[in-house]
Length: 109
Image (tube, rainbow, N blue to C red; front, side, top):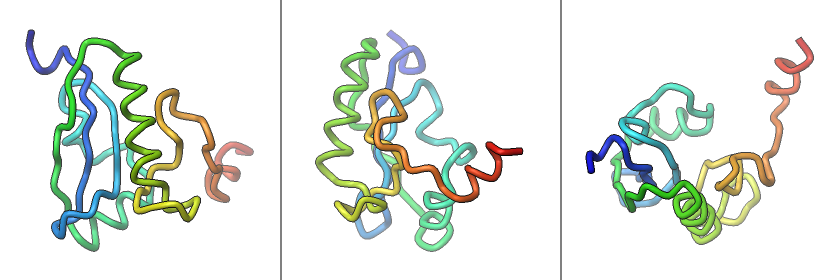
């Protein structure tokens, strides 16, 4: 099975080794800088980052479960529970999502 057909769980780390993002996606998603939050971009601008593939599977359900587990394990910074700049609890992409002021303005427009 080719790597790009698999669903990847990945983490982004500061050069010091601190995990600041847990992600899920196919193919090159772990390496793509576009479509990231301003919080993610601020960390990368300040520190740079390393990428680690944590797990590869063909099961979306397994991937979502692991992503959610890892986000809970490391904790979200916006909830004062950890180091992650993730804005959701993972899995479905919306659980406990905090809408920023910028996002509210865009939604109104």
